Length: 440
Ligand code: PHE
Image (cartoon, rainbow, N blue to C red; front, side, top):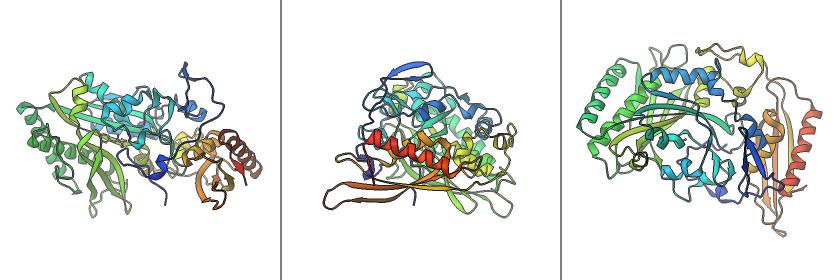
């Protein structure tokens, strides 16, 4: 079973603690958006990633990600809409400012892309919470490209898009009156809709309100968060023809207790769609520390973050996450601005499997994400998935042997065996150069 893309909340297991092999021969500087940045021993951002930084798919008219962004924005029409913040942020902004502990696994170079120790690619849109609250925005939506190192398959790509939404109120009687009025309005809308909600308590011992919050305020705000997001789910999935709600089968939404360092209580939302529960977003009552840092200490409110690719894949029936990056007219010309339509696959070209087996040098642990970044860098979007086929330690020499199976398949054309061999040779020589592996 593949590991799903985990939200930043989950402590990840043992492989996270492995040391990533040091990359040999890295350049002294990297040029990103026309600026030169010095590299250091933590640098792991690859040319394949740098090349995609300017593309900003969520702002390309008629692209499914742009249409989905506009749909969410029109649902939250009275919120400020932001979508042009740079993906380069400090680790402080991505993690510390949001109360991530020092040893949180998300900080590891195996999981995140670093330009150098002081600059990284944001791993989530929450990285901008403090700055947007500090600007004085009370209700806002922010759409952006986010970056996480990961394995390779049809639903994981190192760049994806998130939307962060937040709303804060005055933490006093007048603010709570505003919350109650909004809750009433939302309850009314939901009461008339064909939606079935499985809820969990707004606050519980395992999902507590924050000590500085009046429990009543926290309860009202959590309720507003849930009503607001249930209403968004109705906008996204409740429409006829999309496979969501029908007269016979209501849209099913379920709330699950969660944990994030920067919210409490925290929740995840799942939607039942074509026979499966799909995780749609993470959310919660914003930690007071975030609002204090943003210089709005007298406010209380909520935030959520949702992944656009996963929702677009469902709504448009797009089968492979690489398609979002396709420049093929047979993909792009299918879509009309601000309209959700079903994707018509134009062809599925044959796969070409190639194995590579090697010994890693003594004292070097090659993380699967390191391997995948080499493959992505060489093969680009010609790689469909990578699976670890084998992994053992030689009982006598104590050396580690790894075997990966790479599935090369183009989305746009037939890939010849010679071409796949050529790519495979380059992958092999990069593994030897960068990690000193010994091919078996
Ligand atoms: N940033 C979180 C993630 O990427 C989602 C989230 C956003 C959770 C806002 C709570 C509040 O997993």
